Length: 329
Ligand code: PBG
Image (cartoon, rainbow, N blue to C red; front, side, top):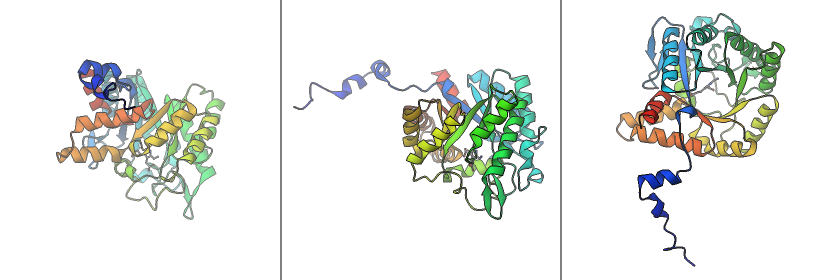
């Protein structure tokens, strides 16, 4: 028997109020994490060409944006550094400098804007002159020595006041090593957000411009980041990071990997985040600037879709715009 006309799906779609009543997913300001690029240059704000509206910030400007985030109701920011190329080397040793740009920035934010959650990427790519997330020897990214450096770096960042450390490298065993060093030093409250299922994606291009790691990047990251073809492997990756002590896990990029977000959320019921990465941002911006897409509409739709797929929160460069939209309506 045909359901029509007893059933007409359009009945509940007729009015704004009834659409609101049956709506299954909501996007809120509490879901947003705002990534910020901090630079050691003297310039207050340097635009990132491939990310319209996004600037590299001096420490002072980063503090101002942290304050802006609080005023907009955004719970947390994520900090990424752009450092003077002179400080870069093969091993990325600047990543463990307690007086480096990021520890100083985190301290300053914690002093000036204590209400904001501070997430810091734990990774070597902003600090290595070859742009890889690990220590490179004879054309190979060495896993275990990289993990040691990452753990030390995480401790430096925790000591500086980072609330959440987020290893984004995809080395094996790094979450366990970070947890162990934090516990050993009595930093048992520091949270770990694991970039657990991070794919070797073409969508990171603009970010690499922003942190200055693209010019020198030799080869690609396929020996450590995941193959975009793989789905079941993501479950194994996430399970390992949870076992090793992750408090939250992330899938990255977001929109092309919504199936993974859903799988991971269903499998583990963990706090699950998705990163709407620089290339996803740039695509929307470029189309909007050409008048081909309506920016506000597609931004909200993309973020809502990421939530619908199962994400509890989203790292997005649109965070301040979206917070303004959501609080205005
Ligand atoms: C590297 C890192 C990357 C991003 C966050 N951390 C780039 C990469 O893996 O090469 C990408 C974020 C974005 O594209 O917005 N540790």
